Amino acid sequence: MSPIQAEIIAWYLANKRSLPWRETQNPYFIWLSEIILQQTRVDQGMAYYHKFVDAFPTVFDLAKADEQLVLNLWQGLGYYSRARNLHATAKQVVHEFQGVFPSSYEGLLRLKGVGPYTAAAIASFSFDLPHAVLDGNVFRVLSRLYNWPTPINSTQGKKDFEKMAQELLVQENPGLFNQAMMEFGALQCKPAQPNCHDCPIQVHCEAFGAQTVDALPVKLKKQIVRKRYFVFELIQSTPGTILMEKRHAKDIWQHLYQFPLREFDDAESKQVYLSNLNASFLSKEYKHILSHQHLYCHFVGRDMQSSDSAEPISILELDQYPIPRVIERFLEDYGLDIFESKAI
Image 1 (tube, helix red, strand yellow):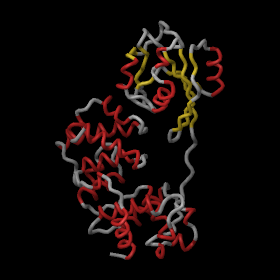
Image 2 (cartoon, one colour):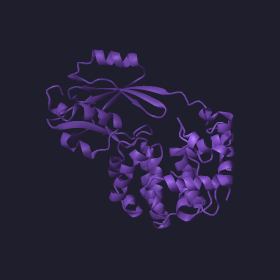
Image 3 (cartoon, rainbow, N blue to C red):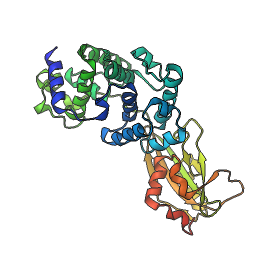
C-alpha cells in the first residue's frame, strides 16, 4: 500500500461519519442510497433514505408499489426522473433477476438509471470488486493531488480521471478505499476553504505545492440556462375541490400533478396575460431554479369555464398527490385556507 493510500484510509477511519448505508453490504440499500444522494446533500438525503427503507424494506416492496406513492415519498428532492428510474429498476431487478442484484460491474450497468459511478459504487461496496468510484468529491481530490488541469466534464478529462482513480485504488479493499476517497473530498478537500494546512497528504499534493488548489478542479462552462414563464390557475369546480392535471409529456415533472398551467414565451407575454386577466387572486412571483432551467411562476385564481377539463380533487386530499416543489412552496406560503377564501 502506498503512503497516499495508507494516509487516506487512516484519515477515514478516524473521521468518517456514521451513515446507515455504510453499515451494510446489501446491494438494495446501497443502490437506494446512491440514487437518493445523486444531486443531494447527505444531510438532506438521510431522511429520504429512511423514508424509502421504511416504506419499501425490500426491492420486491418497491417494485410492486404504486408510482404515485414513490413520487410522493420523493417529493422535495427534485430530478423526478431519478424516482421514476428507481421504480423501473426495482421492477427490472424483480422481473429479470428474481430480486437479486447483479454481482458484476457489467451486470449492474444493465440496470436502468445505473451508470458507471453507481455501478462502481455497488460493485465495490457490496461485492468487494476493484472498480474505482468517481463522484464530484473524488474528482476534486484527484485533480488537486495531481494538479491536473483537464476539465473533469470533458471527454478527455473523464478518461484521465478514470485512469488515475483506478491506479490509486486499493485493490485488496476497494470498498473501503472508495468510501475513504469520497469522504475525504466531502470533509477535508472541500470545494471552498479546504483544510490544506491539516491535511495528511499535503506533502504529496501537487496543487498545494503549486498554489493552484483554489483553481481546481477545472470545469467546462455550463450550458445556457433556459427561462420559462408559468401561470398556474387555481380553479374550484365545486366548494372544497380544486382542479389538478397530471403531467405526461417528456419534460420536467413528468407524472407529477399540478394546477392547470399556461406557459408563455417571454416575461412580457406573461405580464400582458396577467394584466388582462380578471383574476380573483394573484400570488407573488416564484423563481424556481432547475439544473438548466429557471422557472418564473405565478398562481392566479379564476372561475371555472366549460372548456376546463382537468380532474377535480378534494382540497383536503392534496397531500396524497405528488407535486412539484414550486407548488409545494406556494402551499407552504398561503396554506389551504386560500382555497376557502372568497378570493378563489
